[in-house]
Amino acid sequence: MAEPSSGIARRREAARNEANPAYLQRRQEIVAAAARVFKAKGLQGANLADIAAESGADRASLYYYVGNKEELFHEVVREAVVANLTVAQGIRDGEGNAPDKLRRLIISLMESYEQQYPILYVFIQENLTHVPDKHAAWARDMRRINRDYESILIELMQQGIDEGSIRPVAPAWVMAYGIMGMVGWTNRWFNPDESTISAAEIGSAYADSFLRGIEIPVRGRRRGRGDA
Amino acid sequence: MAEPSSGIARRREAARNEANPAYLQRRQEIVAAAARVFKAKGLQGANLADIAAESGADRASLYYYVGNKEELFHEVVREAVVANLTVAQGIRDGEGNAPDKLRRLIISLMESYEQQYPILYVFIQENLTHVPDKHAAWARDMRRINRDYESILIELMQQGIDEGSIRPVAPAWVMAYGIMGMVGWTNRWFNPDESTISAAEIGSAYADSFLRGIEIPVRGRRRGRGDA
DNA sequence: CACTCCTTAAACACTTGCGTTGACGAAACG
DNA sequence: CGTTTCGTCAACGCAAGTGTTTAAGGAGTG
Image (tube, rainbow over all chains, first blue to last red):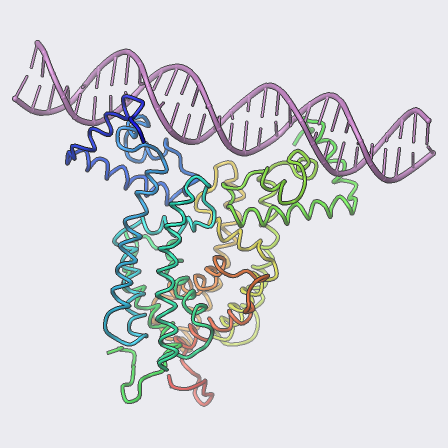
């Protein structure tokens, strides 16, 4: 972009460039507030007035911190999603057999949801099958990350089938989506601030249930309920 | 409502009252087209122009068949959802132990998704946490149905735990939501018109995996390997 | 006090989308 | 062949949402 046309845009650029801590923090608060609003109302349903109210600022003040709603939304989503993918890649490239990795993946995913609440849930809710054309590039990028994530799940599942540690109940991708479903669905009911059960417990329970159902126990190493 | 204010509204009422088969069929086509658009773009994202295009009619022509977008959306959703709940209630009140019922419930749910495609998926996608205030009454109604459905799942799960046929890996509602998640998540990837795997197969696979993981086999009636 | 940072009220132009209107062609029917 | 009905069409008015700007502050700091 050339040079900001308006006064406020100029001032925003200036403030952002000098990296004032207070400015950046307030900005961060606004992003967090936006995340809550997006979670509650969706990208389309949320408007800047809502976000202003949630963050306790005037609508015009938002422009001192962000350019527009889309910039806000992108900012809400991108970082968390990328970080999340990195974790998954780490697990895939680490030690253990397929079921173990899957188990860790499930739990780590739930923990991410908890720690970053509600940002990743915002990403889930907007499943990105339908995004306004304007943000096609960004949406494509996010979809790619999403696909990469799912690929890891599928890959691990297939690996388990190949190495004989997982029963081939159905094609690997069907099973992988099943796991994504269990975990992703928590966006509808899990709120870490109010929940009586932790994310790790949920992830652990799902791993226990689903994986135990498809796992082929290793000979001589019985896998009781302790999962030692 | 008093009397239609506009001319087209009067003509719509008239046509609807005389129950002309051709009229009703065209109307049904429009509803079906709307379902596809809603599935693709979401309630907020879809506009009447999209729906008109999809159904091959002019935007204004839609008003000859339906009053407005909301009416269209409600019509898309309601019937299918109610029918779906009825099926679940039938299974709950039928024969069998908890795991068997759960298994049948999972498969029947997948089959509903397939048969009514994409209508029930539209309902899932709009998770109704955020609906414009105007339709609060309708939304409340739909949420109630949804809750009733989930309650059946939870009830069966709890019953299984109580009768000792299901391991209490986690609270019943957590497990129930896990199942809802696996199945509901299919809305993101399952398209019966293009799928190489049937809805029943998917449901069967999920039931096998998850239920096998939590089921406590009945004595003397051995169910598959291991896990005795 | 003067100065800067940040906020805010108020307004504007602009776009999108909804609901409506009155008229038009085509078929149906006397 | 006139008339009526059906389905459609181009166009309009209206409201809401959004981006943006202006001008005017208050709060804190030197």
